[in-house]
Length: 274
Image (cartoon, rainbow, N blue to C red):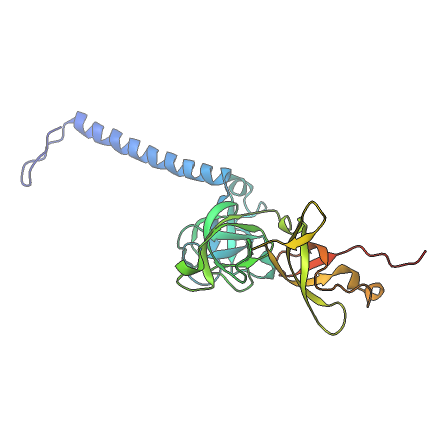
């Protein structure tokens, strides 16, 4: 096991050559083991393999809609079971709650790692600084869109003063929330404005709270709700019945579809006479 200099005759004893072979085999085994561990980790977390079928090269932290699996069970059942490998497309309306954030740059038609569930970094277009959720937007692959409810919860949002572009923020987001989970949560809100000439009117509201004397007030810095519709004004039976006025307190819900930036509210009224 002695080093030689250029021009020296090269004589390799059998023991030295066998040591080289053993070292090479050990290196190859560790490489294979590393690949197996990598894929095992992907199976056990929210990190998956995804193929960029969007038709363009994508940057790290871009967003792709999940458009199916690369291998179907009918094509190769063993390969399908071995690891999750998805097709990624430019997000469309059907990809609300069904998207992945790339963890590495990905050329068109190449396969790489992406996060479909868990905490990751992602850019978000902040439509409202009060929004605490985000969702994939149709035709937009470079970032998510902020919403009042959605399948990505914004754990941290880059302050406006620190952004390169005012309305676009880096965020730390928890993605992969159940579709509609955030929209099922109700909140109390106070009506702040009403627009339109006929029902259903379009309202705006802000988060409200009540003290021990039953007095309702707006929450300072509370969530703002724009594009609010009163359920009691919906349909033929609700036309012209009990329109809300500024100051009314309502129970408010996000729209059933997390991709729709709107809200519905309700307030119980007595409509008859004794």
